[in-house]
Amino acid sequence: MSNGEDEETPTDAETDSDAESVSEESLIERLDGAAQTIEDAETEADLDEIEAALDAIESDLEASELPVPDDEDEDDPNETFEGRLSSLRDELESQRGPYASDVIETVEEVSETVEETRWTVAGEPDVLTAVETFATAAGEALDDHFDPDVVDVDEATNALADVVATINAAELDADEDTDTIEALVEAADELASAVDAAEEWDDLETYEQLQAEGYYDVLGHYKDYPPEWSALKEHEKRGNVDMILLALDSLQSDFMERHCLESLERMGKRAATDEAIETMLQRANKRDQFAISILGKMQAAEAVETLIDYVDTDKNPGLQKVVFKALGEIGDTDATQPLADKLIMENDNVRPYAARALGLLGDTRAIAPLADTLRTDENPNVRASAAWALRQIGTKRALERVVDLESDDAFVVDTEIQKATKELNAVAPSA
Image 1 (cartoon, helix red, strand yellow):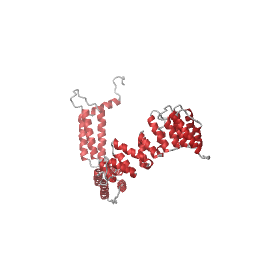
Image 2: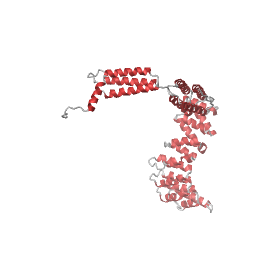
Image 3: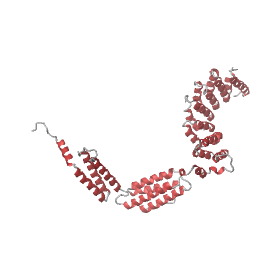
Image 4: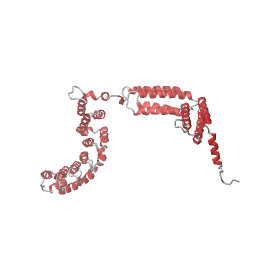
């Protein structure tokens, strides 16, 4: 029996025994053996066995107690073995495959590129030819037939999808179908290289892009410099919104950006294409005041929700003024209540814009708050704007609210009262 002193438990004994059995010599021998088996491996199963052996070596190395050198200049055997183990794993991975999944991944990436890239007139035919060549090569490798005649990008992506589906259905084995997979890998790599080499829109210089789109076709003799500005003026006259947007997107100078935006603003509702509205909305979402103003001129109802979100930005009165005016010009009565709420805001430089916007909306629900503002606001500019707004609504009730005031000490307000009086006298009894 033991007295309980200095007795090793079985676990401790086994651990010490394992640690003693893992020597530098045994690790070297096992790693050398693994290296040789990698060279001799012929199948994926062989490689799986080698990987398991490397896992076992790694576990033993982690559990070992190899001596750490006292001299910092000496190599640490642990680091040496870990480095060699890593190299063997890399070599093992290089021996695997090729796999059908590698081919599918390459083809799907190419297909995505083909679909999402804007190709030039010269580049698209090269892409279509590359897809046709790949489809033919894949058909030969798979002993199948694909229709290689593709006339546009949609047909090209459909052709690539057909090849991918066929490869999936073939259930190619890395050991038994090596030649087929290697042929597909080669064809897929050639496809990727050819598509990568094809000319895409972004490869062109800005001038070349504009020229390719026919931007300069409207130019005859011109006197304004640069020619892009002369062309812009002509496109504005002709209502070519797409060309103005092209210039806005392509030309990066502040000078041309300003002139493009001014063209859209002058065109107003004529410029309200889906693309133009979307482009201005993207800018408006970044609080671009010029874009917001343009959306107002376009009377773009699509912008109302975005602009209403900006109504309460009291810390940015400049933005509020532009937003209020744009909402009034758009004319959507969803903005009536948000704008009416701003008639009592503190900033008396912004309140007139809220009042005038309500006048542009013409919603009779605004008569009461505008009339209250006309009677009670201390700022004459605000009162004048409220009176003007009631005149724009123009109903008998709206005009009466102005006329009821009779007179005002401020000339600008009194002028509106006089105008409302004349207009009320001219309103038909049925109004």
